[in-house]
Image (cartoon, rainbow over the protein chains, first blue to last red):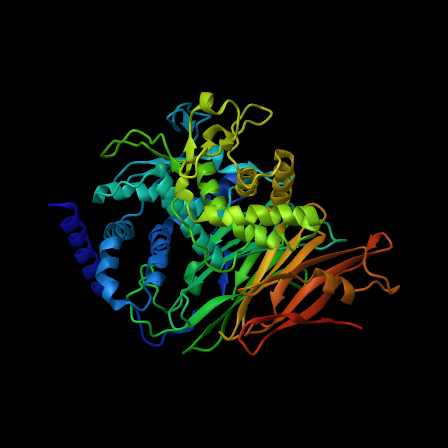
Length: 331
Length: 285
Ligand SMILES: [Zn+2]
């Protein structure tokens, strides 16, 4: 089978899967339930920078398929109203789409290691790498703990950035395309990573609680932080709503994405499906930041949907004995 | 990491190509390693034009000579962001003889980046991959050399960009029911928490509104504040045309208790965000 027919076959399979994925549509409920206590929300320990970096990798890896989909969005946008180019687009997306489907069934396992503890374990061509992996969908991704924490501006260790982690995961998963006959170079995968990062950046709001002078500043590790990623295509009627909501307090990192899971042309499995019926216009990207609420703090995330009323998620933080704040509940 | 939210969609061309690819292997052999600094450089080269555009409004670059240099680098950075496949990251210490990069000697040649310059050693001898601000600084040194600036000038600009990119930031989207859109970003010094810029952008322009905040938020003695610390930027309603921010002023050497300040932005009839009309209101009078 030559390369062209292989890619067309991939395209056909990709298309079939999209059609059968049964995207949700119809008028959905507002995304708010609760209230939930912090214990019910099951945060991951993130007291140290390394714990936080690991938890960020684990959380983002849950959405690896979605990260790869975002890489595709630019191609989609470029062909926005050109129906005739759909076949070409499928041909282009075939291997990526298949990889995404594999990931939805079986996410890649993350294995944390350390070049320092095991010299040579992350050396490739004499270079120490931040991550490495094999060439199959589902190959474990090994992450070098030495490089996912660095010295922050205050001299304290801090995890590498959220968007940097996303780019690394895109890069490493890109190597799994080899299973489908694509073999992107490291440089090409850095470019894909940069593209996804650019894309995420455009729809991401990172809110960190900033105490004002004369109040003393909190060390970074204790500043409550809310990360919301929403993302919108150019035309107002075609939205993929906010899908990721991470919250950090002085001890834990929480993945609250499920709580802002709104009906849209985002697929139920978390993947973005540009071919789903686009009956929804809505967004959920407005964050009211931190407001003092009694002795604690409150942050508010607001959403608006075409068919459901304005909805709101309130995050309540209480002061912690050792400094900083802890998420108390979400309502 | 500071995450400056960039508005708009950037063209991202092919990535810098790494000449020495890892030897291939199939199956479950683990051999595909990613590099953090290469990833950050790919991002920095693609995003530098936007950073330079924003930085141009900032006091760090207020000087006329710096503005000229910034303009020269920006022209190169914009052209180069469309042809990133002409940048190659090369692992060959002898070739570079300590240089960070080598510019092409002819128009069709490759710009070669010294891989080891992306992984400098710190005082303890440990390798430190460039973070995003540092990668932006690297990109400034690279394109300032290409623009023909003296290396001292390139290094000065590079240091300023690194500082600029290391600021703490808060951003909020402006979106008036899809009628017009923009982005509000508040930049503060990571150490002192003083505000360094209050940038508002529509698709066409960036303006720094900090001077207007300074003018509106005077000290009780009627004089402008010695410095201003703004934080906790938030919208007060949807659509998000109205904002609230906490503000603290330093008057006569000491910081005053923070207060709430409101401001509003408007859409113009051509459906762009009006960057000239700004209404600022203190909560208590
Ligand atoms: Zn790689």
